Every structure is written in C-alpha cells, then in structure tokens.
Length: 265
Image 1 (spheres, rainbow, N blue to C red):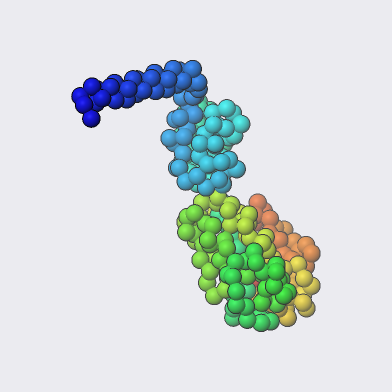
Image 2 (tube, one colour):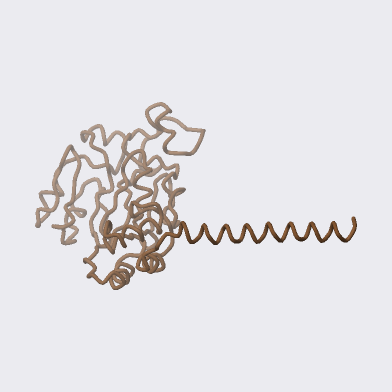
C-alpha cells in the first residue's frame, strides 16, 4: 500500500468520525430531556436496592413518582423513616410518621409437629406443590410447605427454612413484600415490628380437623379472646385474629392458648 492510500484511508476515517461526532452532538441537543433536579436528588437519597417493594420499577421509578407528587416521600420500605425524612427535606415537605413493618410467617407447623402423608422427591419450589397430591406432603393444607421459595426471592437474606418452616429474621427484613407476594399459601404478611403477640397459624379448618394435622394449629376455641383484657383478639372462621392496634402486649392470649400457637416476641 502506498503513502497516498494510507493518507486517503486516514482522511476517510477521520471524516466519518467527525460526522458521527457532529451527528451525536446535534441529536443530544435535539432530543435532550430535562430532568428534575429534585428527582436526581431523591434517587441519590434512596438506598438503591431496586427491590420493587415500593410498587415501582426500582428506585429510579420511585424517585420520578416522588418528584412528580405521585408517591409519598416515605414510600421506600427499605430506607424507612430516616430515608423518608431526608427525601422530605429535598421535596420541602413534612414526612408522615411511618411504622416499621416486617414479614411474618403465620405457621409453627414444623416437621416435628405436623403429620406427613408421604415423602416428596422433586423440584423444591412451593409453587410446584399445587401439582402434587393433596397440595404437598403435609396434612395441613394451610401451613408452610418448607421448600424456601420465599427465601430464594428475599433480596436481604432475611428468611431461612428451619425444620420445614420458613422463619424471618426481623432485624434483616426490610418489608419489601416479595415473600408475601410469592407465597402460594398466602401465610406471610407484613406486621408491625413492635407487635408482641402474633398468631402462628393460618388454618381455618374446624378444630378436630386441625388437631389431626398439626399439634400447634389454631383450633378456634376462643380462649385467647376470652382472656384478652383489651378485646384485641377475636375468632373468625375457626381462627384467632389479633388487632395489633388494640393489643398492649400483655401476652395473656399466648399464656392461655391450649395449642401454644400464639407467639410472643
């Protein structure tokens, strides 16, 4: 290749580079989208977990919603009150008082306390149990299946399956709600971090049916409700329910429960 050819190739490459640069520059100016400075500040204040627990597609989606006034400043469950207060300052508003929540598994029926109808060997995913006989090997059709689907989706490593039942580490839990959404038995809920007494059972079967399946299942006897001095406990569909707003944490319900299915924290 002669010198003229080399110079010609270099000139062509240089010209193409200049053209592309000019085109991108013009396109950047032409299609520039103004970004709200508050949105960028809010995004920087968010923890960046992108867990979706706020109901938006990651932290950027929430930041845009807050900046546009479509979401409250304390909408991030991971950041909690501290992040909410910081974002409130950015937005020039006051943050409403928030109550810290954590996920709770309403079941105590581990492998030692529940009856197993058979041994299951297959894909260890709770969602697959709808395709196997009786909805799983445990006799109780309302209890934790113990295959850890909730633990697999938890972005904070806050859930462990212990002896066949999922348990939540409430210090690690950020109440993102992923475990609540994915549990096929719907026995995980978000409860106040400060809750003292919680019903560790989701069965709505009649007492005799529950007793045959689990040693610690709620039988709907109503003893807990009768002994609650604040009227915070009631029985619905053969199942005890505690109103956390009325509960004072006296733990009388747990002490009197004959099946010990009310946990005290």
